[in-house]
Length: 122
Ligand code: FES
Image (cartoon, rainbow, N blue to C red; front, top):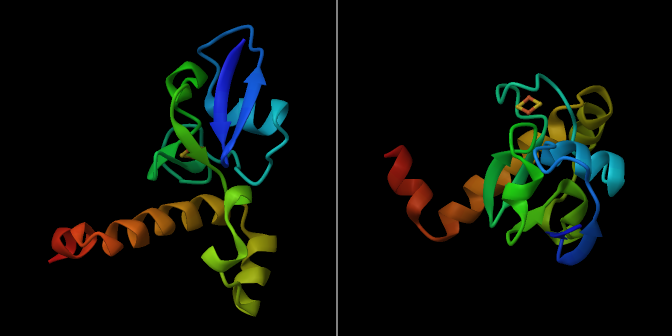
């Protein structure tokens, strides 16, 4: 049994193989289906979650590697973190990769608040 901190809450999880990708634990055991499967090769970004505030591909991350880190999925966002606009809602329904892309954007915005994002693009 391992303990995962997801969206600010600790979960005791039993997995038969600690090499199981974090994505499947989030979706199949914890029921957090906002994180999507796309390519399974760390290309599309559909499975992106924040691990200690940095975007990570949960399809390529062993669940054992997530122990001791703060994981944030799209379900962990507060309403003040994201103000949906009508076109975004339509896109959400059509595009299963959108939650992962939003997580990546949030990572960039958070970094910009510390000033490091601006330095990276200039
Ligand atoms: S599923 Fe495509 S990057 Fe993880």
